[in-house]
Image (cartoon, rainbow, N blue to C red; front, side, top):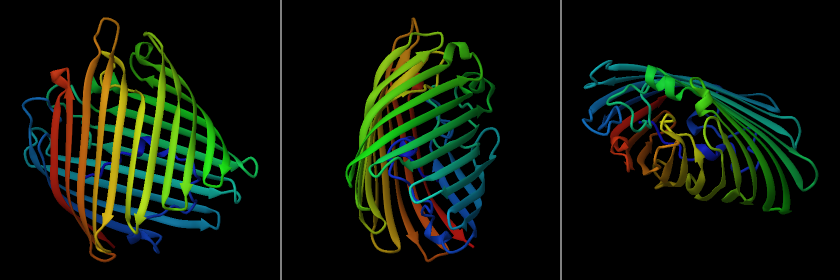
Length: 391
């Protein structure tokens, strides 16, 4: 099973307490520059194409070796790189039963001084078995795609209490199926500049400007967008146990070929690390997001609530759960009505850490899309077991 990352939306543009140059790596990979892991999984998928009707279910067996390198190349620079192919075999998939995906990740973090550091992270995926499937696509459509994501962050101090953060994100999507490619292939740029001021050691007030450009590969004159964000907010940190961040402001979005709009924007997250390997994280985001059917809708007015919980029963047994609920409204193009829908995603896992060389997990994921447009309804559940071996 592929773990959900419900906080991914906020990783680059939420809490701006500087990430350490030597960010944590999995315990099993610590102390070794080069680590080989192999994950073996077996799970049942109730809806392998994410169809609204006539769903196809299947057992899925997968093997995913991974080669990872984590090393401090000098006192100021940390380098991390990994490559992971994943071979999935579907017992009841009507077309190709074997699918081979790839993921390559590269990260470089460098501290220029005690107050200035840069963190660059690039991930390239060839995804043949997507974790989250699109809604409303033609029945049993292959949703394979390539994706490249680059995240960069430069953090520095302008004075004893004043800091600046410069952020950039670039994401590229390219779908295999012709119809999806014509509709969804695009590149997104997001640039941010923040100035923060420490009111007290634990609390920083801030102002932020973001600039976003979304360029579609096909029919861009009807689908491209440019947005300017003006935000204010705060970051609160009480030691290493509690962090709270919030942003609120306005987005001015210019749509090519459609009416432009000015809309509110809000995001908030909090995290409480209450014990070793145990935490609770929660958040909320309100924004305009891209739709998976830009021919009918300009974008999606999205609310998203999410909670992640991890609790260590003891040093060897860890439980985790995540839930995301997203009431949203698809904004219809001229002559089209708006469509309301709610997306709910749930994941739970029980993991047994059998020393430094083996972890075993039992997992369950449930996805539900309930829409006013029946063709967009979707239900999918996946339940299985996996083992990860470290060499």
